[in-house]
Length: 159
Image 1 (cartoon, rainbow, N blue to C red):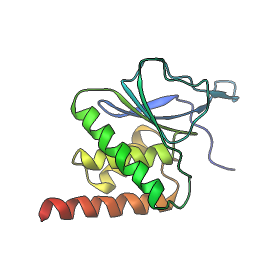
Image 2 (tube, rainbow, N blue to C red):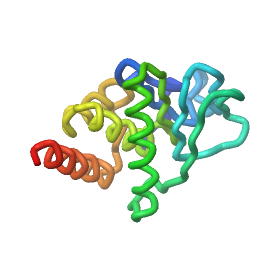
Image 3 (spheres, rainbow, N blue to C red):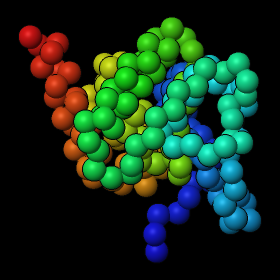
């Protein structure tokens, strides 16, 4: 059996930071689109499906990356979005990190935001899996990237 779709449209990872996808499993087991309205101040999406929001007037950034090995251009998107997301959360805004299923790409970005907010890599991964799903961050390459970014940020602080 593969990884099942989440039955929640989005999950609050920490105050101001949410993680979700474009697909959700409904109560009948059918997969349906998640449409975001104005629940958030900033939507950072790493996957796109037209007609899924957010509402007009909500800040939105889109950058497509694969749920796989990332190249330098892909990482530049993640780093830029992580900086935007962390700054927004610090300013009291509600931020949604979003991908297709709401597990891996959105989890990578949410973890990078948490790192910028002072959390350690292992703690960020555990929190995301606890608050979103045990299936979150099942892409082990992304887990390695989170640990590497956590070490890089810790070295910057120590320097």
